[in-house]
Length: 275
Image (cartoon, rainbow, N blue to C red):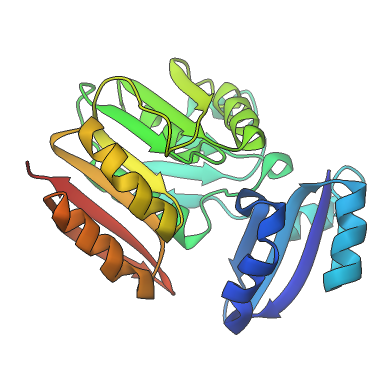
C-alpha cells in the first residue's frame, strides 16, 4: 500500500485539510508530533497516479508499506497502544491468536489505517463513549461516519446489544468490515449511506457523529428523531470556533449540552435529548 507523507508546521493544519480535501478527508491522517509545533501529514492507500500528483504539487515522500523496512513501519505507522479509561485498549497492529482472547483490545492494523484512535476527534469520542456506556447489555448504538469502524467496534466491546454503523465512503465501509472481522465482532451492521438521505431503522440510546461542522449542522435534525428520550449524542469533528453554531442548533432541538471537551483546537460534545 502506498502512503504519502509530509511534515509541516501545525499552523497550516486547516490549510492542508482544505488543499487535500479532493482526495477524501477519511484518507488524511494528521498527527501532532510530541513536544514540537510540527504535524505529520499522511494519506493512505493512494494510487500511483495520486502519488505522482501529490509529489508534484506538494512535495513530501511516498512509501510502500508492503516493501518498507520493519523499523520504518514501526516508527511511523505502528503506534503505542492507546488505553481508553482502563476499559479498552486500541492496538495499531495485527493480533496474535492468543491476544484475541482479550476482549478489551481493539485491533486497527497499520495497513488499513486512516484513523486509529490517535486523532483528537476520535479519541474524544472513544473517551465519552466509554464514560457513558451502560454496564448492562440493553443499549443500542449508532455510528455516523464510521471511518475505520473503531467506535462501532468499541460499542460492541462495551456491551451494546445492537450496533449500526454507516459511512458515505465505500473504502471506509470496506475497511470497517475488515476491522470488525479481524476483531471477531459479530452482529455489527455496516453499510454505505449518506447521512443527509439515510433514515436509520429503529432508535438508539447513544449516537456518535464524527463529522465536519457544516455536515453536522445539516445532519443533526435528521439524527435527532432516532435518539431515544434521555439518550445521548456524541459530536466531534468540530474546531473551537465552530462550537457556537452547532450549540445553537442543538438548543433548537431541545438538547442539553452535558459536556464540551477540547483537545488542541478540536472539540467533542456530549448532548442529552431531553424532549
